[in-house]
Image 1 (cartoon, one colour):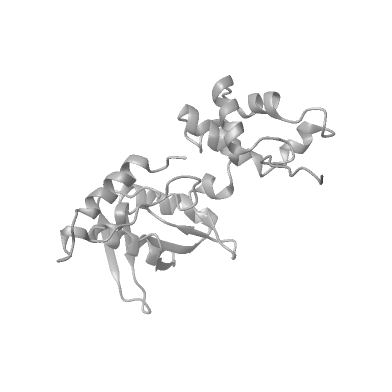
Image 2 (cartoon, rainbow, N blue to C red):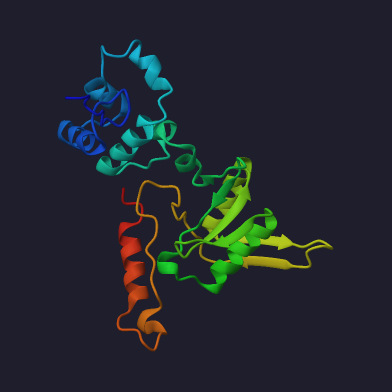
Length: 222
């Protein structure tokens, strides 16, 4: 009665993500090679190893499962070569080939120092800024070779900019750093909130504090 739909995550792995997750957990598979050996469709695909080299569908999924189960850093060691470009460089590739950078703003709560830091970085690297739908500030138009410097300045909270005749602005900031908001991740990215009882005269609960606690608790949870 018709054909059976294929539900595997890729032609090489005939399992759903949930099924693959359980197999890796039960068998305690720790590396991509272990997963290939135990779960790939050996014998059904000519030259399986060569095919897996270019498989950009199953690699990030397997890496995500391994990092979740065994608490590994997804950008270190053998895992970094399995990740999407976005996960590896901590930024979202855009249609121009450039990247967007989105620091974490838990619950949408942001300090003046953090705003100055992001503004200074955006001026220095000529980035376009936008408030995102997740109550964060996105900076767009970064080239891939700029990302290490951008993240170093955001992470350590130190940046400076001296304007030109066209941009009469000077800024220097040293404050607490900001981490990645994981706007690219297969994970919890953000928790939004209203201002709640912090400011709203109709507020019923402290929604900002709850949003911050939830995001801090589950950030990066895959």
